[in-house]
Length: 60
Image (cartoon, rainbow, N blue to C red; front, side, top):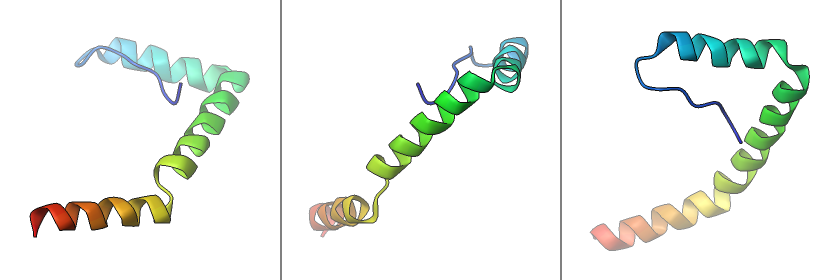
């Protein structure tokens, strides 16, 4: 998991999720590591460039 889910408009649930992350060091480290892995794989420059080239090819 890269984050925490809560119902739209439910500020109490949002506050609970934020407190979970603040209070749990292991959870923070797990979420941070997962977010970094996702950023490195989903947003690397070569992949983004290829996606833009494909998109531009479709609209031109």
